[in-house]
Image (tube, one colour):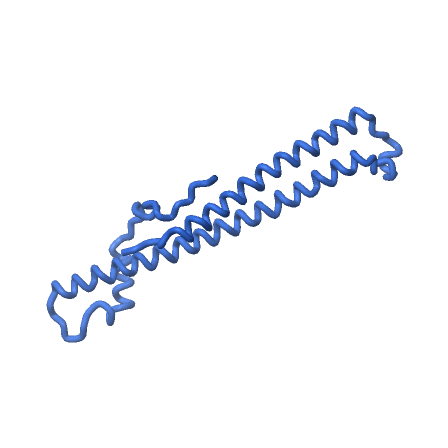
Length: 156
């Protein structure tokens, strides 16, 4: 299983410059400074509170986007692996059932029993490989879903 625990300090090392917060403050001045308030301590306290709340919102949004992107990539890989598994199963059946005897391209160059056995074994090995890969990616996907359902994402 993949270890995808979003309760870990995943975002602790992300550093934002002051300009990031200054831009946020400019956009949200009505939340930061009460009209007619000149108490610098109160303003700084409000700014600090807003900075923490904004950072939590930002990190939660970032996590959601990260997870959505990660799940999409896993789904794409799973589709491809499932397709390859299907082809490997079809290849095995093709040689197992001697279906190649009905195809013109094989009449000119017949398949020996040794080649047939090798093709069947190759198809079976591919099936095993893709089954393991599919199981691994399904496990990763489930681990992500489980860690999300068990976490509160980020708190202030």
